[in-house]
Length: 260
Image 1 (cartoon, rainbow, N blue to C red):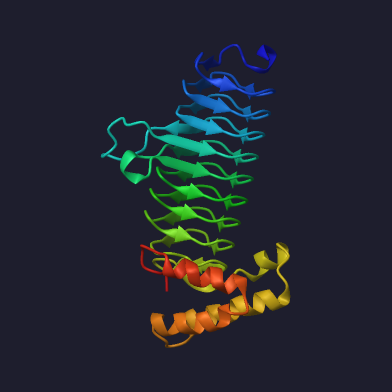
Image 2 (cartoon, rainbow, N blue to C red):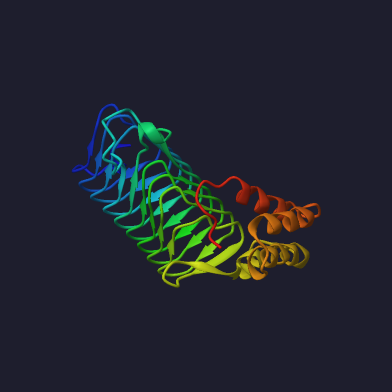
């Protein structure tokens, strides 16, 4: 075990490291940190607790995980960060713990890929199998569902939600909820630009499933119908499509305005 930990690393005795965990030079691991088997941590990283990190994650150099939330209302209350298995964090990523007034926990799922300089703020919930490109940034309380791609320099406003399989183009500033399957791109603030068809094909969606998702998109975005009228049409389409039901449920549960 000791052979896997660089002699310059500083690990609090209260931290718990699983089997095969590697720790690079000058990395600091604080108390109340639990790291699962096979996780690799590069040099000059900082991991503070309370934080739980799963198995087989790859954390590259200069990553800061589990730091205090960047929130003036935070007053030192006990809050947590929970990270799943098989994630990759490239250089200079930052992931903060939650806040007492915001649910107390930041959570990241499995199999995500966070490229350099990505920031995940307090009380965010990130699903699984997402890709956040360089400098993508989540403000506090953002929810990102599974299989979402954020391109480089994307910024997401606090409390926004991004639905499963959505794609956000480079440099977009997202200030409203993005429904599942939708692509958005920059135009002052981001605007819908169709369905993430290529991504759905890669994940095994049939032509029939994609056609129903496209029909839902047209009902919401391409006509003159008001939102309530569009939701009625979506409800009709949803009777034959679980994907469209998820699309409609996402719209009905939002706190932020819908990006439309």
